Length: 324
Image (tube, rainbow, N blue to C red; front, side, top):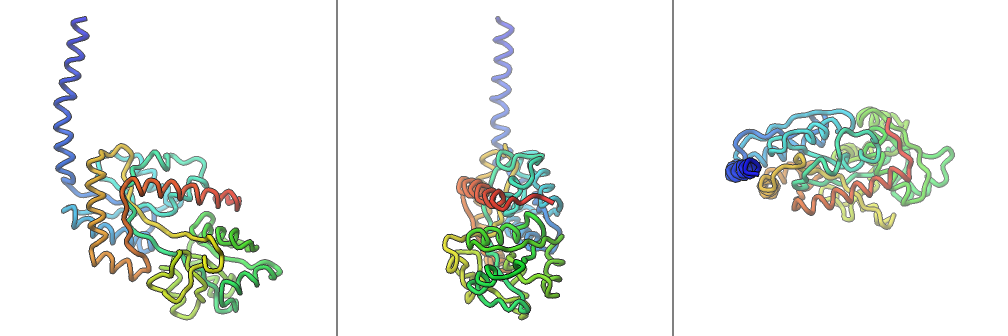
């Protein structure tokens, strides 16, 4: 009995001594550079948002926030890496709307999309823009709906691939509007746009960062944006909900840490993120892209993230979308 009590006392003593050390480590955080992973290649919208956030967050934390691109598998490679990383606040993920789509598309994920992460804060959002080619002759959403109901064969739309945002947003619209549309998936945005410009596909519903420049060049016709209100960067383009009641969707970006990251670290990162996204330089960079800074508490972001998984899971199921 004495030996058991002695062993227990040693464990209690060890825990007592460890607690102040852990608290000290958390209060000193961050004591070195932070890795911020993004699941896409350099140069795209997600990468640009990530680098904007990294620069602003680094200023607030007083440490370098180093962006690391780890593309592949619709961002699942980066997500899996972060979910399995040490939960110390030094490896973070810039997640996108793909994180809420992938759980319903991929049945054999190597990480738990909810339990594997500690959400920190949303950082930005961006509307999608529904566009048609000039060659199509489609000039408005009512015109599109009318033509879609009468077209033989059915109208087609392009996307960057099965399960991409462009695919899901258009399927959500198609379902809400009750119209037939045929999906033509490509391996990326560039080949999709190339075929649209060649007159082979008339429609797409992609991020405003991708579509607005082509609208300004006169190559695409802007029909609507996905958000409840017009986008500041394109105030004359109406919300889709004006024609299809109940439609609302947005592309979002947010910061995640591995599950198990100490609460003190999450709170410090959240506070720094809120201040970072108020930085005029960061806000201006996002505004020019057609995005806007958005922040939230860890609890609110967790609730939002779970709701997005449910929302897009229902769209995937209704459209019977299968991964490539």
